[in-house]
Amino acid sequence: MNAVIDLGNGDFLQLEPARRAFRLYPGAGGAQVEVTLRISKTQDLAPGIAFRVSAQMYVEDNTRRQRMLCALDAANLVTPLIRAGDVQLSGFVTDEQLRVVEQLRAGGDLWVNLKLSVSSVEWKADSEAPSLTSSIGWIQDPISEDEMVRRSDEERAAGKLPPPGTKVVFERPLQKQRTGDLRFDINAGEWAAQMTAVEAGTYVELLVPLAGGAEYAGAVALLREARELLREGNVDAAIGQARKALEQVRKEYGTQKLYDVATKKTPRTRTLPERWAIMAEDLYSTMSGAMHADEVTKEFNFTREDGAMLITATAGMLKRLAADRQTL
Image (cartoon, rainbow, N blue to C red; front, side, top):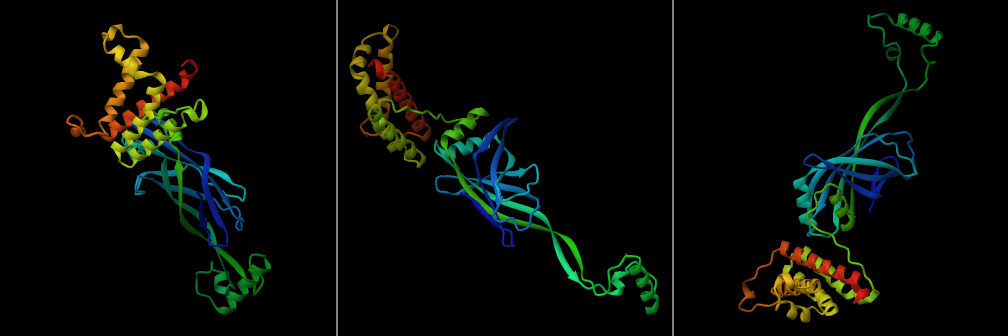
């Protein structure tokens, strides 16, 4: 995950994402994007050259098709050394763009591709032997050759001209621009934290602790698989995996027996464990509709948003179970 840009003089620029490369800051109708990169030279053969770094930021969907998100620019020039330093690029995205990105990643990691542009002003050196005319270019009126020699001798004697036959180096500024690609991922947890900071999140990232080691590992693995299936658009299959994960909750809490007791009571007279049991059993029943095609469920059509809600609800049940296991 680094970009190597050829400087054309046997040296190279190297750019890679910093440890915490991505930040979002609240804005009016959107958010400021800040990306921090590490930049260095491999040999620093031409020291002291300052570069301006900019980029076009693209995000990828599930098919790895890239979509333009925003332009990024560095506020200051950077002079790279062999030892890596930081360069910060910033841009702006709207709330609507953030919602689209949320749909693209669907709860998973976000892949980013930066189309980098690195520009500089460097000096082009040209060597040549100056003629008398070029040496005394301030002479505008036609004069004889003898007069030109006389005046040039005077200038040379005064130290204003180099000795005869001296090579004079002329330098001219030359603007150069080089490009490269840098692709890296922003993990789901990091992205979710940034979205929360700008109050633009539309997906819930819920961490389920593996309390008790392997006891819950199978259920959590099923949830991970459900999330990946949902990202791929396999909604019914994703709900089916979440349903399997919920079976752990039903078994540990004994929700079927509690449900049978609770449904014989009025809602106001049910105990708290009975109310949790009804929620768990109703959640299980709803997800069963994605697995069967009987007279009632054959017309069920679950959307991706339905799948996200059911998977998140199952994750919440597992998280509660992990916290309660000491009292069960």
